[in-house]
Every structure is written in structure tokens, then in C-alpha cells.
Image (cartoon, rainbow, N blue to C red; front, top):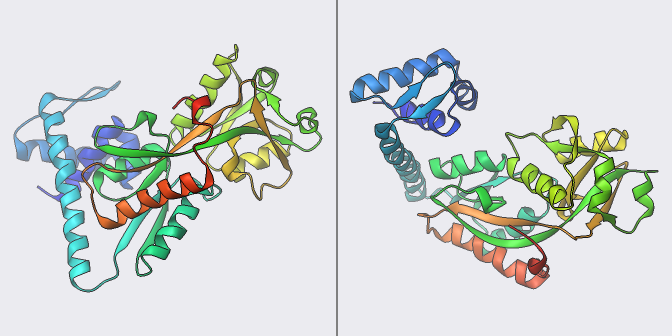
Length: 304
């Protein structure tokens, strides 16, 4: 049994799709399938039920998945212990969704001040991918909406971020101080790439439905806020986005949403079994900054 086989099995188990798992592990699908079959032969059990239409874990596969994740996490921790014992500066691997959002950079700045020798590696990844990498031990800390977090992920809500809409200059909404949510019913709304931000898309759609309409979705998606702002600036669509990432988006104007006002919940994410000093330091910095800046002040007006 090889560690790569465990990684491949975990990827297939989480994606439930051999094509997506192969892309995630950067190998061809046929090679991934062969490694899974080899793993099953070595174990003498069937881990996955697969047809041309679906992939599912067998009871043995579900049990093996728990152990495989723990093995991979232990291996990563062993490597970290070895590096620390050699005197290498401690490292923290932090997931960020998009470089445009300002919450995590502020939190990490404070953490760096507390631990000057800490080496911080920022990894840009969508929230579902952060969940996977946290469970696998490839990330130490993440950020996102915690409503869809799997078991094994701990979270701390630190910010309720005012949601607004990006509009092109000259748009009729640009003259308003705030935009009623129901006014979006007559506009094409851009959504994020579903694989990267399903929780944000779900939040946006649920907000619209609560206001009495299903949004008209712009054909096509984006994988970054800057890419979204470019489409908005061209007048092709509007884009709902929190206030924490509206700086330096040329050609667009941000207006807060109202009737009702809406706030997006940001949480710090980490492995529930990880009680390391540096992870706790990031969580503490997030909690302290939240209190100091009043980031949770509108909490009673939101849903998670």
C-alpha cells in the first residue's frame, strides 16, 4: 500500500467522480482508476461501487476513508515535527478564497506580529477544496461560510460582512444609496464557479428567493472577484459581493443591498483535532479583531 493510493482514494471518495478526482490529483483518469483497483486487490475488499452513472462508497470504503484521512494527516504532522526538530521555522498553511478579500490578510498580519518567526503560506482555494485539504492535513487554517462544513472541521464565526451588488458606472442603481433585493429580479446576476464557491452561490440564491423571486442567472461563471468586476464593468451582468472585497475594482460601483439588509457569515476553519499553538493563535486573532472592529455587530440580522 502506498501513500499516493490513499490520497487517490480520498480524492475519489470526496469527489465521487473519477474525472474530478484525477484533475485534483493531477494524473490521468485511467491511472487513478488503476491505482484504486490495485488498492482494492491489496486490501481484498471492494471500497467503491461504480457504474457509468455514479460512484459510491461501500460500507468498507466508508470505514477505510476515516482511517485513510487520519494516516495522511499523521504523515503530514510527522513531516512538520521533523522540520521543527531540525530547527526549521514553523510553517502555517492558510487557505484563502480570493486575494481580493481583506479579512484573512488582516488576521494573518496580527498572527505574524505575535509569532515573528512563523512562515505563512497562503493557498488560494475554494471552500470545498479547503475542507478537503484541511481534512487531509494539507492546510492548517481556512476561511469561508461554515454552514456546509463536514464533520471533522471546527469553525469560529468572526464576521458578518455586509452584502452588496457591483454595478457598472452609469447603471440606474449607481444613483441609489442602497439597492432593494427585489430590484435584482429584473437584472442578470453573475454567480461564482459552482465547484469553487457553492456556499456563496447558495447564499445569493436563497437571499433572492426570500425576497420573492428566483434570480435570472447570467450564462457563464467566474473564478475570481476581479474577473467578475470586468464583466460587470462591460455592462453584461451584476454581481453580489460582500463589502470586504470591494477595493480596487475599477469600472464598477458597489451599493449595499437592503429590504432586507443581508450579511455574509465568515468563519475561521480548522481541523477539529488540531490544537496547535499557531492554529489557536489565528483563531484568537480573528476573535479579537472581530470584537475590536465590530465585525459581528449586525449578527442578529443574518442567517448562517
